[in-house]
Image (cartoon, rainbow over all chains, first blue to last red; front, side):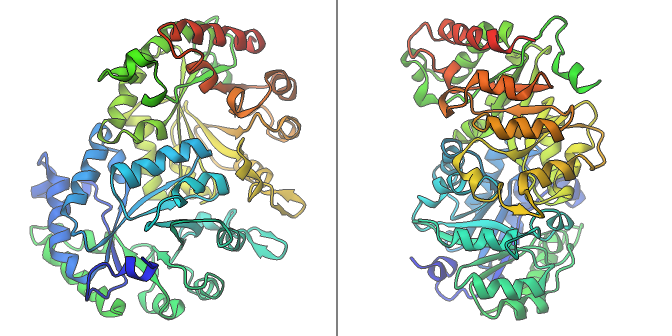
Length: 262
Length: 262
């Protein structure tokens, strides 16, 4: 499968929108907050009403891990609600020495069955290599992130290029069976445009729209119709804190879809 | 508590040895491999026979996450075996945008109750800040790791200094309630010696002894008696694959202790 085929698993689905399921108990509508299955009921409803507008769902592990023992069963049960025509992204930002990263790769791809993962490049090639062994998966490597801390090291210049560019250029030379993609924050449209030039046809995962301040029109323009998954989490999930939350989420998703239709 | 007090939680414990509980079913002695509680029985036995020789236990999350839903209950149940006089390190290498890293910090410190964590600096200050809010914890930031991939980006020079040095120098200026430490691989004794000069009295977590090739004598010399936790995992855990595994592990731990006694 090509990256594009992976991205368009559903015949006729043609959206760059990814819905980020950053679900937290304290942010649930009140009627769900007190229920044992609150998180799963919420995720199920969100997936049901938003799926016609998106091509992907991203699950950020942190929000689930804070609930301890239940974490991975919450993640796996959420995956069951997602139609298998959608791309599923494990936003786990993993990375460790080779044999250890192998265990992380088995966790997200074999045990949980995600289609894609986010990984951290700080530890270099062998920390990512075990993920790259999996065919028909996308491995999104952090390049330039959407947060203020991206200033600290990612922009540090070496040989006249910022670190994030070295990450991209080096990764594009790595041997891989998977598809390599990059995480580039929506809060940097100018750099996004430059990155598009040297990231070729590789897929970008672009978070930071909405609550984090990224502008959807700027991002679409900067990406110039290349393969991309544009993520919105809180702005869709928490569009309403009342019983109409799922409809409000659908309405927000529809709004983004109007910009992200292919 | 000072870092030193944290490291010497046990009155009279005076070892720099940390035992890494990188437990995998396929590496268990045969009689435990087929048991439902094999991992926990193994960890319990290892802790029982090695605890007199070490001051810390490190749990690398990857090895547990590969077992899916059970992951966090395996980790939490393992913590119950560890005497509360020992430092417990969550080797999770986490890092995400601020609000998300907050959830990871709650997971390891509040929910699981670890004393220390490893974090990845690539995303910069706000990705680590939520961990630094916790008093009496140690936050070990990856600096120069023990794997071959550390060549790829960590050594990249900017303003005449390698990236890992920028990480250390910048982190030492960050506002923190926790103690900041750094991960420096045992496979680089020369750089370890240099790092000791500019990391001051901050604690180093030094993995890479044994299976990874780091030499214990070189490391002790390079560290020159500054605060450090020196980790050995596989070489202790899998000293024997027979029923005498716990005694064999103790004997290996005792050997390392002879070099790491304070």
